[in-house]
Image (cartoon, rainbow, N blue to C red):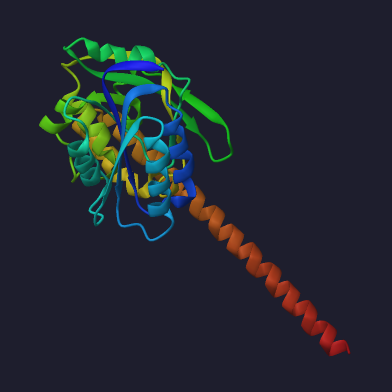
Length: 273
């Protein structure tokens, strides 16, 4: 078991996430770090999520994991994250974990949490494991070279005091975590860890509906002065949207042509009989 100098607090926001939440909760219970607190903010789920949370609380209590559950009307994921921060222990280390992510118990947790024994250290910037829809995995290292790229909240361990002083923005859309990190972390001391602490499945809104993340992502690039990158991303998205539209039209026209041919063949047979 890894003894952390400050309580580690994992915050999970969920709404109707029963299909993936079980794996996420099991990964938290497998984490060998103590003291450990898990805060769950449920946006009034109507599926099996409340039962899974209740079962998790019972199992966690027997394992020395403190669990807090808050059920409240959904007002956006980042507003819910800020509410979760307020439920965390006063002097704690915060990790945001989505309801379809998993912590990696084999990750470099010892070096990550012991970093905060030094009072000047405010964050750990870790690697990230991403799982593609086809099951393939990719690794994104955590290092200063990554700063020009959008940072995911699952890559960061942050002191609670930093998040209470500078709450996550609630009006920046899906780029709020990247904008917060690029705005408030530079100038603070932190540790960069190549290995991943969290595994992320590419099943979220930003992957399923990329057009919803385009505007916030472009705003993030413009705010951080990367105008050329913003232009390239806009062009790439336009080409991708055109190709997807063309493939969809081709599939529909092929299906329509096949139905028309079948209908004509059936009519010809009836005429001959």
